Image (cartoon, rainbow, N blue to C red; front, side):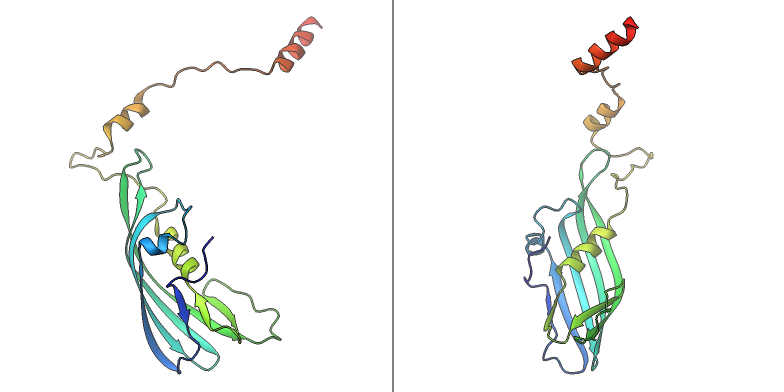
Length: 180
């Protein structure tokens, strides 16, 4: 959950019709808004935004460029992944009588009374969705993973057999069953 505000608000009230350019840097300050995230860490992402304001609508063209941190899914070594994304969002103004105005994938609605849009959650989702489904350390020239050898050794060791502890109530029921 993000805390509202920060430097990731788009203040659109008072802007004249036409094109406007904004820039955001997503780094340590950005991560303070999402202290419990595990999706990524240490982003170094620049976001360029071109806003084209019209009478009852805005066209937001975003360009994300940078990297963010994560961990190898095999050995937990820290790694970086690219964040490169371009997306256009249409923002329409809804009047009080527009009861069925709902946000969609590339369509957002704002009230006539709104003066800004908090972009922090959108930025977070974009970076999180840029992370590959599986992230592994790169392979060396022989095609072998460059993962931490100690962690790879743990994969090679057979799991120690574990005796399953059973609930004594089940043991009592089993003894009854055996008597019958």
